[in-house]
Length: 111
Image (cartoon, rainbow, N blue to C red):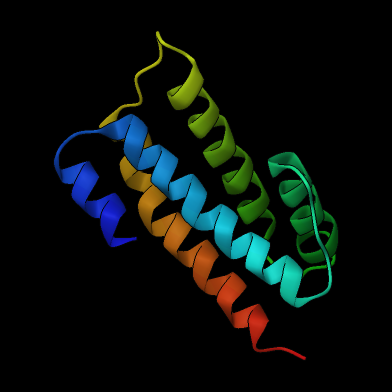
């Protein structure tokens, strides 16, 4: 997450959004693997987190919305040449993503 802070300081908002998404994605993938799940696609990871952790109350519903928002930001930033993320979009997501990652880390300690 330090990388996100550094690219944000430089004003590279598309890259910051990308790094936020991948931080959440890799933590979600680790959680899924730890609990015996696997997904072949990014959408599959988002779906399995929703189905197995959000719908069952292990993670707050707001994290599902956040994960989808981060995915959309990454898609737009990486593939839409006319899209430029803004500071106003990205800055509020940094602490929310940190909380999401921490919540998933906490679930790793559960048997």
